Amino acid sequence: MTRLAQDEVILSKCCDPDPIYIFAELLPNIGQITVIAALPSDSNDTTTVTLSSDRESLSVAHGGRFANLKLPALVRDGFVPGIDVGSTRNVSLRLPISHIPNELDPLELGDALWSASSMTPYTQVACRYCHAPIVKESLETWKDLPSDNWAEMMDFWHCHKPDTDDSLESGHNSFHKGYGAASSIEPTLGIALVDIMCFHLLQTDCYVEVNVNPARESDQERQHSVRCTSCKQSIGAASNTDPEQVKLYKWEIRLRKDSSMTWGENSEQKFISAQLLSMIESQGVRRFIVHGTDMSHEDQEDDSTGILVSGATDDQESKKDSAKDM
Image (tube, rainbow, N blue to C red; front, side, top):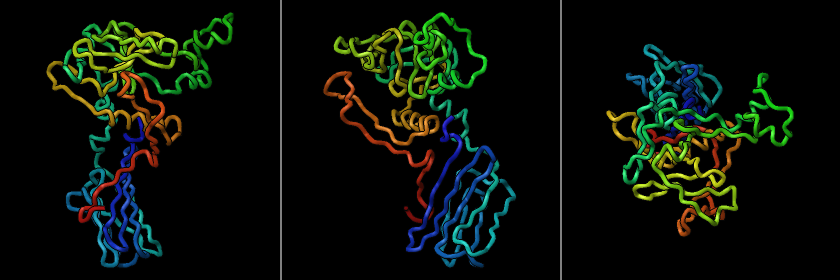
């Protein structure tokens, strides 16, 4: 689970030459909100912190100035905030919360990102463009893929590893033993694998066709386009080494858990953001180059240009102040 599901940060300030800044961070694991108010001068007898009657907002007053912030969660009933007046410009306090907001609930987030835990044997997947069925009814099992560094963790940290044939050469052993860095997890008939951005399954389990590009047959890193058999729209990709294994981009499809529910769709930005947050947490990197597809040449990736994305913090969100815009 990414830190997006663990913390929520909201920043507020008054439009004033010497504003009061309020920083609030939700810590659902300990059921508290950490609040820091940065004052233009040292706190004194005029400095007060109060909660609204509905326990949804926090107000800070100091030296005739005033700032208000809508909190990321509801504060526990009966709690009265207090501060220690002293020679400091940063006033901090902890607020106990009554419950975790639904939008931060890990199960809700997993459901929104279409994780395997939110799927059922009756889940229906259709093309986003023509609404034709994509996944066959014979597919009833959905499994989440492990983290990107699962093979390294298995190889170095697990004491009880699967039996391996020592007679195999070391170069091939890592591939056959099923947990080394050279090995891979592959979908099987009737079972789909799920990661943050894609569904991985066999072509025989879905209504798609693989558009093989002869120019890429010698390039093992390139992928072939996967198209809807009905409208011919590109909705995924297939590996050049094994075109039978396809992946469906989640933003190119629509989904519902069963026939009694409404269809749901998600934007590409939502899944890309979740993927970047996951990589920040698992790999410790915060700078990425995002490449797109060269639309002037069908199905060809354009590696010459890209967008540089830097992650300052995992889950910081700017929000309007209650009185003035930031």
